[in-house]
Image (cartoon, rainbow, N blue to C red):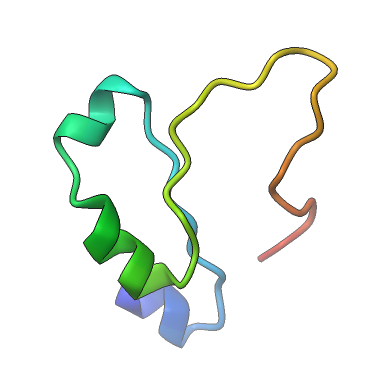
Length: 54
């Protein structure tokens, strides 16, 4: 993750609801500066992630 950030990439973490049991969301949020997403999005609901981000 740090190599990606050093290369100028925006790092975001997306996991399944069950996956939240295996990651430290607070630590990942601190490292990325963004919340860990784990909920499913229904068709037609807006996408929270920006398109075309690097």
